[in-house]
Image (tube, rainbow, N blue to C red):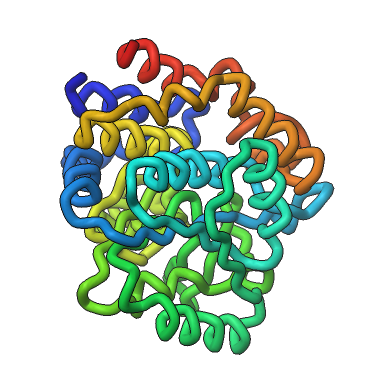
Length: 304
């Protein structure tokens, strides 16, 4: 299966609200080919991968983590682990329960690291993380994790949600793991709306789009995977990595029913909310499950 096909399947925006809809006004197609390059990097160089995820939604009726991000991170971690890559998941305290609920529902026992939200405590936690794991970590992957934007008027870096609302008070500054990473650590960012870690890789193009988004993230990564939904990018990376390894059996265990069960339990027990509708429902970025699961089903059908 050509990886360009996989990239094409995830680079659509059915809700018309993400960075891929904005990309039509950009002079070049941003980050084309990064999916294949990132998969090749993991297949040939990765020893220990840390996947950072969890996007808190404080303005929801039930403030909690959003449904996009955790399932993609868990699926990717499971595939990497089953194919011999030591992998851990990283989130912060306010998103921990959603991650734990989804991991339990999906039967994934990856190591879970949890940072405090408080800035000072988070800084100390990150120092400890690098001391304990810095020599082992070869790659950082972010999927649907907020990073700092730049407000043109105040020149103050703020992390903002899709509505442009600053959420620093509710989000640990885990983007600093990418900005302060040791030189030997390579980084991959996965996002959809423009305010996620990795979107700074083509920040100048985002800033030049009309209208320029207030929430555009400036944190860069070595490779950036764009998708209509961030989970799709993580699923595509898992698929591409498996193809590189010529071993796709771990993918077949991720049936639509298993993913739906993980989503339902994450919403019910996390809790978690749809980041667009702000409701505690089994949807992702405003998409019903039947639409959300389509790219994954297409990849699985093509793999037989």
